[in-house]
Length: 305
Image (cartoon, rainbow, N blue to C red; front, top):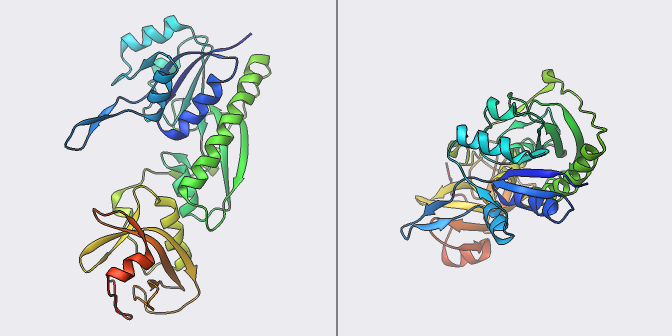
C-alpha cells in the first residue's frame, strides 16, 4: 500500500527530492511552493523549480501567501498520511502542525542539532567543517528542533563549493526520503530527540557578509567564496568597480593583507594568499582571470583596502 503525501518545497534542492517521491509508488496528492514572482523590467514571471516540476507532471499546486482557515480545511480534507517539507521558505503555523493523523517531516541539510536554521550548507562551508549531511526529522513548532529519524553524512573538502555540496546533499535526500517512507509504512518509526545543548544556528546570509575582508586568513577567505558561489557571491572593489569572485585557489605567498602580489591576480590575506581564477565585473559576464588581465592593467603592489 502506498502512502498519500503532500509535498512542500521551493528550490532545486527540493525539486530533486520531489522527483524521487514522484518516481516511487507513493501518491503525491498536492504540492505547496512559494508563489511565483515577477522579475526585471519585462516583468517576466519566475516560478520555482518545484512549481515547474509539479505542473509538468500534472500535480496539484498551491501557493498560498499564508496558511489561513481555507488551507487548514484543504489539508484536513486531503487526509494525507505524510507531509514532507524541504526548503519550503515558510514556517508552518502550530494549528497546521496539529492536524490529526498526519506525520509532518522535514529534510534538513545538516547533521542536527548542528546548523539549525536557514543556511546550513553555506555555514558549514564557511566554518570549514569537514563533514555535514542530511537529517530527516519530525517537525515541531521550535525551529529544526524535532526528533530525528534518519541521518547520513557527506564529506566536505577545502575545494567544495555550494553548488557541488547542495547537489550531493539533494541526491542524498532523494534517497533517504524513500528509506524514510519505507520505515513509516512499516510502522517501525523510532524518532530520537536532539541534544538541544549542542545546537548551533545557521542564520540567513546577509548582504553585509558578502564583501571580502583581506585581514582574514586565506583559508577563511576561500571558504567564504566557496560558500557564497554562485549567489549572493563574494566581492571586492577595484578602481571603484565591484568584482565578484567566482573561483579562486589558496597559495602559500606572504604579503600585506589586501595587496596584489603578482601579475596572476594573487591577493594577500592575513596568512598566505588567494589567486583568483574566475571573476565577474558588476553588470558583466563571468570571465577567467587571464581574460580579465588582458583588458585591465593591474599594478603589482596595489592595495585593495
